[in-house]
Length: 430
Ligand code: NAD
Image 1: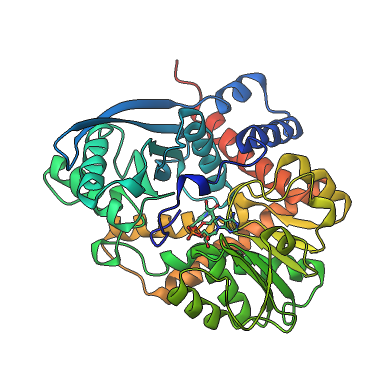
Image 2: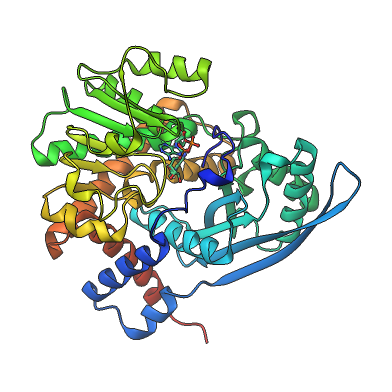
């Protein structure tokens, strides 16, 4: 999902879990809507995407043949500001998936109270089999096909599965060529030289670290010495692990697609990162025991930080989880069927739309900096990120106390309430 992500193979696609994560999301939406006594009209409005675009994207392959790809862009809700959300290149992309991810972005931006709506896009393709030239032509043609919705005031894409800084630079260049001047604020997640923000690469992991601090403080558990297990050692997982270790946590487990590592006395995260850099994966790291990804999730620890895939905590394994706190670095790591089991066990879950919102928050900072043409130091970015994450955690906690619900339902309730109140203020243009 990031500028630094390696291209995922289709078989690693994050939507291969046993439950449709978006149905799960909508069931949580319904729960929150009921708590809020959302009126029937607004309920219908908030369950409907504003705009869905399907485009055919013909490009010339290196072989000289023409291939036509299908692309989507969905603006789910822009009542609070421009659409914000990534673009993914993947064989598994469908309109249903893009629509649901766009809804997810709507709630996420509202939880952290940044002035964006939710959007998402995708092109059905296998980037692993395409050359750089083909990817560039695909990106530029897709961009020009959806150019009427793009813009700093209307829709601002970002990287997602299998897209990165370079793809964002092509989108920005194509848009700028059409508009006859450079418009850096049309995308976020760009290279820093092109108007990207310092701190963006670390932002999601940093946000996870901040909400972990908040959660442990709330529960009266010390951060120093807290035993943490991290699933996924990519952008989010490895950075969260490194920052948590700097705060005194002991990272007892970590994994990636190749398998997991366990060390009772704690892993040296920098050393594991160096190993992964050299060997591509964490497995084989000599100073820890090997565990499977399934075993990793049920290790004895204080904090479990799933930062890889969707649907890894399910009704099947939830009862075996020993962590006291779960910080959802990934999107949708917990299947809806597991929520009740985790609640009954008294596990405190910081949901994805809060826990991993650090990334979109610094994307917002990038957009602000580009528009103002005034760039912040990394220290300023991190300070403002911390303020937003701490406030958001406390706001969600207050809602959870008010309605006596878990943090996930509280986050949805806060988000839906914010989007609904903007609709009420704006009225219905008819
Ligand atoms: P990434 O590609 O950098 O890293 C993914 C990691 O997960 C890799 O280490 C990979 O080996 C591992 N992985 C893949 N399949 C696995 C499996 N079956 N078991 C265990 N590990 C597996 O991706 P990322 O940017 O770190 O994103 C991770 C999650 O966080 C995704 O759900 C993403 O949507 C979410 N997220 C990322 C950001 C961001 O800014 N990067 C923001 C919000 C949410």
